[in-house]
Amino acid sequence: MTTPHRRARHRLAPLLTVAVAVTTAVACDDGALDPLSYDDYVADLAAICTTTTDELLALPPAPDQIAVADLATSAAQILDDEATQAERLAVPSGDDVPVDDLAGDHRAFVRNTREQADAWRSVAAADDLAAATELVAQLVGGRNELAREMGVEACARGGL
Image (tube, rainbow, N blue to C red):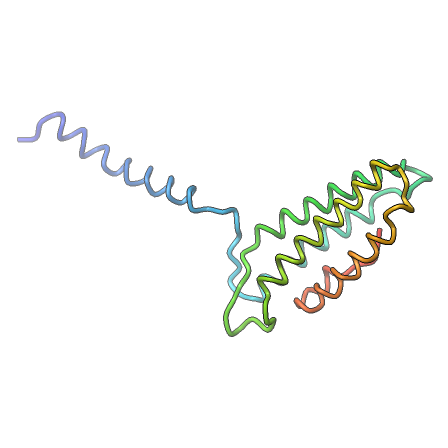
């Protein structure tokens, strides 16, 4: 004969199993999206970059329609968003990846994007567009070279 206590335990067992599975999944989730292949990775990163480029190009030109500080702050936020999204991508590895150190290149790509955002923040603080033009141009040039090496042409772009 089953006691009420045993029946309650039997009913709770499946719920506990689900709770443990969900907790484990959440605890193990680092926010990374799992691409199925190198091609998926390239497509995902290209989509992120295309959206960022569209957002950057949609900013009104300074100083005609927007203050330099506002332009720089907006550009920094857009680039921070891009870096965060790119950071979440799981980088594929293996024989089917045609890039020697894609994981290292990916980290450098994210770091460069964050450095561009920081450069734009320094422009916003100084309210001087000319102050960071050279630094941003150098970062964009390095990023463009890196994006092409990674096989993600959509992530290569001109300055703002």
